[in-house]
Length: 277
Image (tube, rainbow, N blue to C red):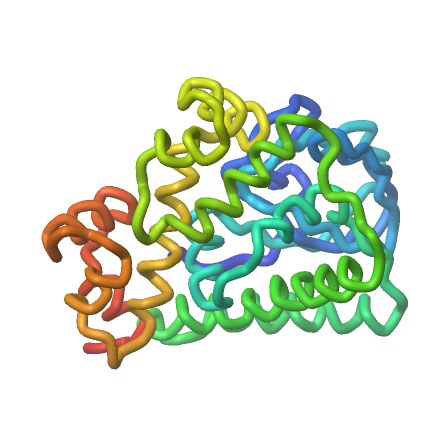
């Protein structure tokens, strides 16, 4: 991870007027002016004092930007986001569909001050910590941010009949995500999930591409990576135990999969987590 930065230059926002699935999400507060953000089917004009949370791999555009529009924000790419998720336990897939409609929150004056203070803490840690400890420090701080959103999601959806899905394809994608969350440790073949949903693998792949902007196989791999990283964080677990829990035939097959997805071996990743020198 390079030095983590807090930005105020809106030209660095990873979104523009053209809809695109973002490789980087962004999170920040509007400090002046306004702009229209469209996330999937939800179009909303943000204004001063509103907190924006856009996850990676979401379909986003930003337009009608006022001349005085300003934000204080930070960016989180997919790799970092999967690392964050690996330390939060198994979040329900419903959370990610919820965030498609609830990416904006109006803050009071005290909450604005708290968020800007949080950004200063992130900025300080990202630029001053020993590089060996920096990554985990930043990830722990970011987990607080996303955990707060998850708690808000749980409170809101448990107290009201909150609609998460709009279309038939979204319902398929949601069911697919729920199945992957449950079975990714033992089934990594798209055909298994297509059979469970009583549709063809080709149609499932098309739906996931349309709804999530990635291939079904990539989504399965993301869930598996989060599971492996979560287990690797437990220093008491031998890698052979992780192989059995995740359902790989051998340690070498797990290592090949993990290196292909992350660029490092399980042992190398574990050393970054536990700061073993």
